[in-house]
Image (cartoon, rainbow, N blue to C red):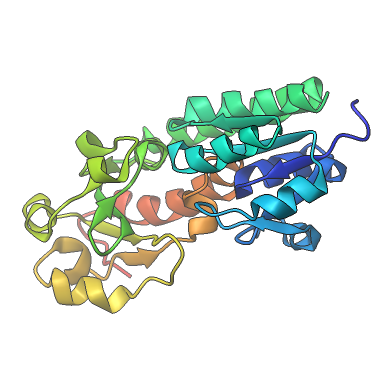
Length: 265
């Protein structure tokens, strides 16, 4: 165990991982958007994802700053220029997310705890895949990450949908960059999703907007339009396995296991 280490976490998933490993003591600063676990809000706030308080981070004197994605490259460069050690990861798939959890465990000297955590996540994912493989049908799913412009789900979301027994209608667009995932209303209508998930990054979903946009789409006609929590689904970390699998499976299973004589809720 490494004691006395101080780490700034520029995004939320790293915070949750450290808490799950029993090492919240290493956290020296967090994003203002941190929600998991609720007690993580007690740490100094230093980041807003694409903006960070560089001076505050420097004053806190961390041993390491950990960020996520190419969107934080300028923050990373500035911190490196100020003499700080910085690690920025860019995990985009479920496998990469699990490997990142192992990496975080090694960084703080908790390799075995991280290995056990990841093994549990892998077992759960396999169990869900085994269950969904027996569903009599695979509903078509549209996951919307942003509304203006329309962005469909990123790679790890697409994998979750498939693992839970659905078919992501935009799996072919589940690229790493937002512009890769831009879709049009015409495309959504043409692919006729049976389930719609709204999960907008940083703001509450207006479910009524889907009913106005897509009145003839199956998901709207059958009232299969749901809001999902971005703190669970839009962070490449443990929340996907702790809660994300269960929440998505519940919605997809309800439709995937209907028989011809059943009625929709």
